Amino acid sequence: VQIFDFEKRARRGFATPRHAMSSGALEPKKSGDFYWSKDEEPHAKRRREILAKHPEIKDLYGPDWTTMPQIFAVVAAQLSLATYLGNHASTPVLLLCAYLFGGFATANLFLANHELSHNLAFASPAANRVLGLVANLPIGIPFSVAFKKYHLEHHMFQGHDAIDTDIPTRGEAKFFTLGGVFLKIVWVIGQLFFYAIRPLFVRPKPMGKWDALNLVTQLAFDLAFIKLAGARAFTYLLASVFLGGGLHPIAGHFISEHYVFEPGQETYSYYGPLNAFVYNVGYHNEHHDFPKVPGSRLHKIREIAPEYYNTLKYHTSWTKVIKDYIFDPNMGPFSRTMRKKSE
Image (cartoon, rainbow, N blue to C red):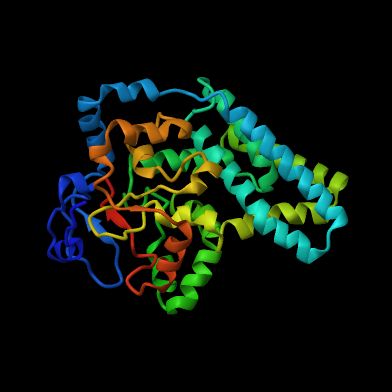
């Protein structure tokens, strides 16, 4: 893999090499600000170029029927464990299990909804939405329907100011860069919370019938589960969400996907064992290049077109991603690539 001095190029406002998944021409990087690209997001152009050379990738498109049984299995396991621990385990054991097992189960269900947002379980969008409501149940908080709206915008307008709510707000980024390592740790612990509420302030959307169904279904399930299994069982579910979304190896994917570790490259893949728990979401360049390919087949894209992926920087440890984000003084909430909002 050829190494380029991306940092120097970014400071001077140069474009990065094409095969480096270029963000295009970058404006000179300013302290306390994001990386700003003068060009469009790179994946649509890459998709056209890769398909011109490897049209067989289209054979990978389409739903994967195994998504549904996986979701039902994880939902059943998480609810069963919550019921048992809530009624038989001490609080320390309950919290430990929420971290060791619940964190992985919750991440699996979050990323199942990610698959469903791209209609990758069924051909019918409605069927994917209904299955999303099921995958949402052990999370305790309704998010499935809203997630799809914002996530598809993240793909279409990656990095666009005031549209891509995956990126921290300027105020959020400024605040969490004030306290060095300590505030970065706080941000990592609460990153799932910020990820969830940020769209409500940056780009609020009206509630539709599916949003209402998601809300009613989730509230009805929560009340029924608390009545049948107990409040401590429900506490286990919420603890799984909180603990699994913060200082947890599986939560490293939130940072690894688009935080800039090499200026000029704005999307990064992770090739490691934890992909097995989260529908191969670590194959993130592959996913953004070809969002119609389900997670179970994403690895085949790299096998078919290695010249487009083996030259990119990638991660092999989500734990290391979190550590580097926290302790590297050059990393922080401003380590994202932005582009001006389209008119």
